[in-house]
Each structure stands twice: as C-alpha cells, then as structure tokens.
Image 1 (cartoon, one colour):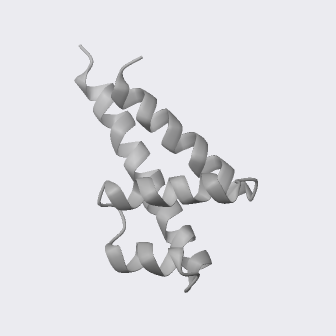
Image 2: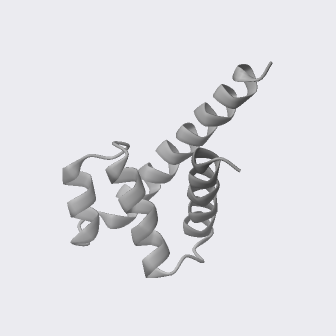
Length: 82
C-alpha cells in the first residue's frame, strides 16, 4: 500500500467515525488537523474549531470537503491506471 493510499484510507476512516458520531476527541482533532495541514480548511476555521466556536458547523463543512477530497483521489487513481 502506498503512503498516499494509507493517508487517504486513514482520512476516510476518521471521516466515517466523525460523521457517525463515534469519533473520540482525539480522532476528531486528528481529522480536523489533517484537513487544516492539507489546506482543506483555513486557519480561522481550524482555530475556531479548536476553541469551540461554531465547532459543529466547521466539522460538518470539513466532512463535506473531505468527501470531495476522497472522491478526487479515487477518480485520480481510476484514471491514472493503465
């Protein structure tokens, strides 16, 4: 398994846990940190989440963005195979 695939597998796992409401605080924090460090949410959103300001709305938006990121990765994988 490539490092990139492992990374996206982890993102998918965390997104599923967060979406279902079964994520621990650490898992939710990891998901949001991933989204921030990869430029999928901005600094203001990340620090608002960390400080509990509109955290649920920010997490829901990040879940939507995460889904798009995963779809883009899968499409890239599909079309790059020969």
